[in-house]
Image 1 (tube, rainbow, N blue to C red):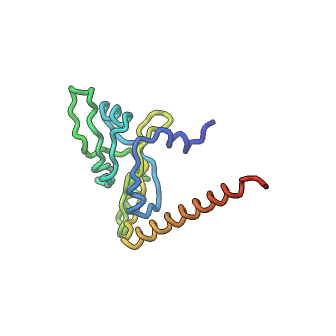
Image 2 (image 1 turned 60 degrees about the vertical axis):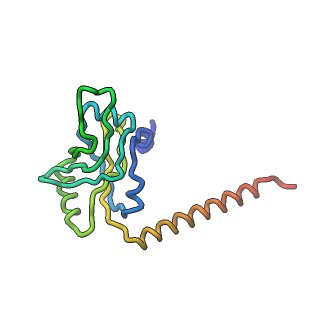
Image 3 (image 1 turned 90 degrees about the horizontal axis):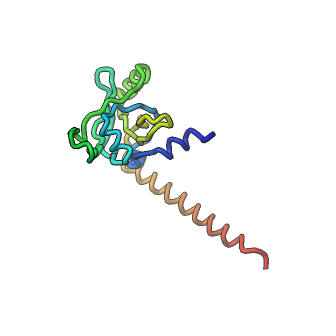
Length: 166
């Protein structure tokens, strides 16, 4: 049987890589998303942008704000605003936990990626995030560059060492 993580990454529609640069992700959570019919078609066609999106807790519900889903071209009879607020589907306990943590200083809820579950439902992976300072971002970049450099040197070393014995 296939790994569950592999199933979700194979069906990934959109990701918010910028969130990992701008925030420390402390916790991750999966949520369903309430979409209209033409929006589902558009999401399946990967016409989604999560770059400017965030989630808010309002009156006991969680809402996805700022996510852009391009209108589906073949649905001429229905006009849907591309950047409308969409409800996220979570349990009451999850909503209360998120609300408590967001009230702490510096926490926000950011969408990390949107994908289709193996059962075919659209899902959003949310991250409970703390904002990074400029020096934190520079440290992250320097750390990533060092890892790349090390991997490249190790790869070069392995290529030279596997040439066979003369």
